[in-house]
Image (tube, rainbow, N blue to C red; front, side, top):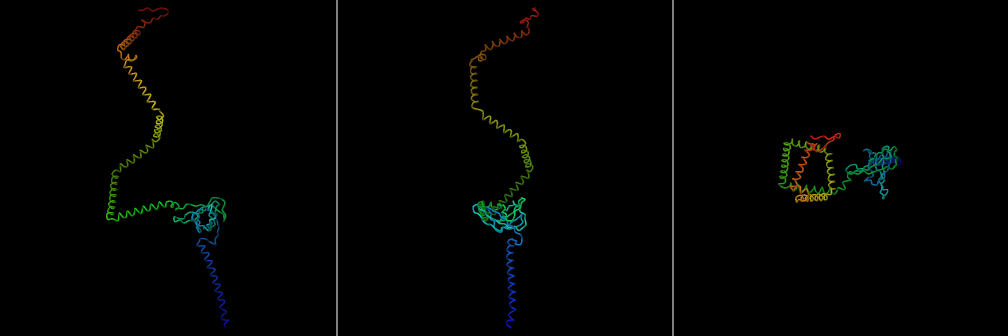
Length: 323
């Protein structure tokens, strides 16, 4: 009787073991594929691997997403240092989408946002030949938005310290009893000045408009006469060059000598030396010269009136008789 009662227990144990095994395999399967799914790796889809070699990966890490025009197409699966001199960093990408990638395409490491997230951007080329899985494509590093802030770090710290000092000083001023009153009075004065300025502008609106119009006309006039002004400036430059080339000292010396000679001639005339001095200073000689000129004038008049008295003409061998 005991053997008959114990025999049914073995099939129950076997069924429980089978169920446990099935659930364990299923759990392992779910864990494996679930983990890969959370990582963005679809084990059931077609996977193609491509590679790039960087001299500076820009902080690229395993698991970074690969985008094509903003659409996720894969992941970074490996980032390994393969050479230290020169530095060469091998990066492996897995592409989960069926994409024809031209051979001159390029993987670019860039920042996702200002917080410093790093992604890979695939820039498709224009070549007619397509890359095959396992090929090594060109790559590059796009400067991140925060790269330029490192050199400005000290300056930013100094500016923030100055702002903090100013804010503390302002706080101390306002904390006093008269601080708020002075600030209110200052704001009131500024408001009054602004109102006065508005009144001045309103009352002289026509004049301001005329000034602006005159300035505009003056600028147009300057634009129109600009060629003439350039020509005048050029002429002044030529004149200045000519004056620079003249021997001013020699001209002054020659002029000085001429003045000395003229003074000597005037002195001789005043002292009676020479014919010109005698002509100017001796009245007798001047009178004789005047009389001679008068006599010559009378002779010429008489010759003009009575030419036959001084000139005899012979016509056909006969002499004309005088009347």
